[in-house]
Length: 328
Image 1 (cartoon, rainbow, N blue to C red):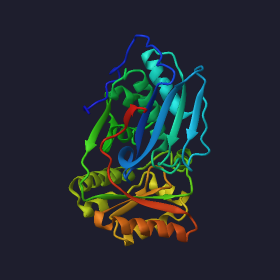
Image 2: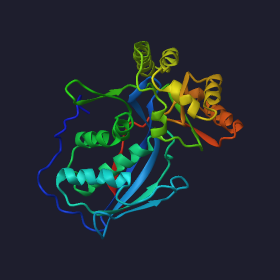
Image 3: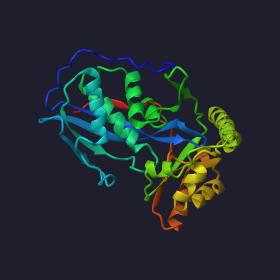
Image 4: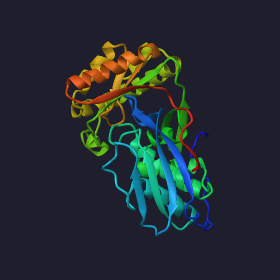
């Protein structure tokens, strides 16, 4: 995409007609891993694990939103007008002047909620893309990105969730959002270990200090530069030196039961580095592809020894971003 997000892109002053009852679209949205250590709230990568949302227009008013979860995860999630998918859909309709419609969302969750893999970002992006598709794609992707960032509050998950790949996003002095697609070498393997325990983003943020000292900020700037160069070149030594953070990880590791032991197990199995994925409690390790399975097994086994059920997956970077199609 271009170097900046244009807040006015794709907008419309015309009142749009409602889609027909029974109209349906399917939106596939990838999981994301954010921060990657020093890239707090600005760096995120899309992974080849996705949630699928089928959105169908129903009879009824604007307060009707039905949610059907087709997986073991997410049984605590509820429908209604306050659901994140529906709130995102309503933002699109308000933007284009279309009267709101009742919706059903049938969701297959492969990205578990409250695990630090961008599940809330998948809901936001699905609502935005699905509502926009039902409205005839009235808004452009740049406008959808602007809305997604506004709803989520920070860009590190929603941007790669929508665009795919490894994305560095920052708000420039002009107040425009700048998105840089960064390179990820084919010889860098991502391993995500997902425990059964949950950790809300709100709780993880409350653990952080209100202020940081200059040496910590300087250390993170240096680490982020090393990490991005290591990811671009596939240089494991640079990745190892770059996967160090002083802004959020020191305060979040104590919230993750057995997390330090899992990190140690990943390193002993051949990982270049192991960090908290997003706000946690899932952990992200980076390693050579030849070490991916061994690192995954070591991480899952370490959590099991602490009495925490976990699964670990060796995943590829997902470069395509979110996609939608008409439901069959």
